[in-house]
Image (cartoon, rainbow, N blue to C red; front, side, top):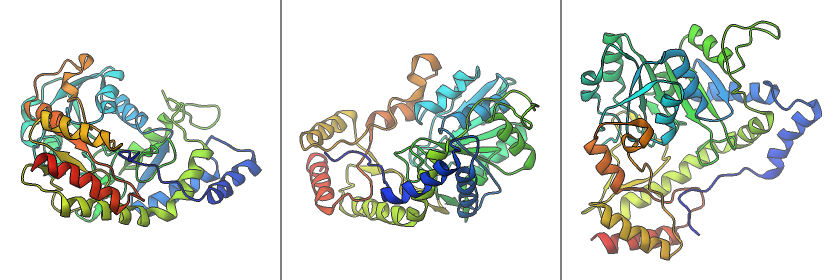
Amino acid sequence: MIPVTKTFLPPQEEYNSYVKRAWDKVWLTNRGELTLELEDKLKKYLDVPHITITNNGTIPLQIALKLFGKGGEIITTPFSYVATSAAIVWENCTPVFVDINPEYLTIDETKIEAAITSKTTAILATHVFGNPCHIEAIETIAKKHNLKVIYDAAHCFGVTYNKQSVFNFGDVSTCSFHATKLFHTGEGGAMFCNDDATQQQLFYSHNFGHNGPLAFHGLGINAKISELQSAMGLALFPYMEHIIAERKKVTDFYNTHLNFENLKSIKIRENTEWNHSYYPLLFESEAVLLKVQEALAEENIIPRRYFYPSLNTITYTNGAEMPVSESIASRVVCLPLYVGLSTIDLEKIVAIINKLTS
């Protein structure tokens, strides 16, 4: 089978060497030395002022919304993974959808202000497939209306915008370290911010609100990562340049060999160093998509309809119509993209798609 993605695993003996350190210390959680070492390495590699790594990639969104959403309306995108909208609803806030740009696939910044009301407390925007939003416009709008900005940057490990980490933008940025991501800890995530006060809030919120062992800053939850997860991150860390370079080879192959007469790919925003996290392909219609998907499946090739459906159509979000997002969600698939995907397999994928769309 050729899946849409495949987890990159470091040599098992290298992972085991990190696990042994935790084993020898009999310290498996509560911010042991592996977690502290991983945070330090990531902070330097990503060039960010603050990072707190967590046990998954969704709970940072929940923590940020708990701190800054305040039960209000959250302006957000309908084109993202379900966790983005689910976190808003879960934290007793109300998602207010704004349609997306048809080329970049990120929230359409020109439509945000019209959605702001007296109940709006924050903007939660997704850097889609690692492609940054129009950060400057969103920052200007947020300052004008005194709103917090939370970025769902789940796909953005290693992405830079204007020569700095995309995690350095917004009041809080979040990332996923799920096993399907470029950098992973099996299951995990992180939250980033720029100022000390926000970092303190994020940090104590992820650790039950603790202020030392016997006192509490306030309300918190358990979002701590384990040493076994951190061990995976440390073992994977030396391979990041290799992972991104190999994935770039795959995206370059698609860009070169697909016939784009009746197809479209994502437009990466200017001044972005992209990480080749996904390869979304847009077909002319859902009917064509389904025809291609069926033909690929017959060859045991499994792309993914990602993101689908448009989140405004999910029952519990009760969203208004979003014509652009709904159209794109019905016509987009992510093609197989991972380290080790052979040229022979890539040729097979491209041949099937070109035959059915030319």
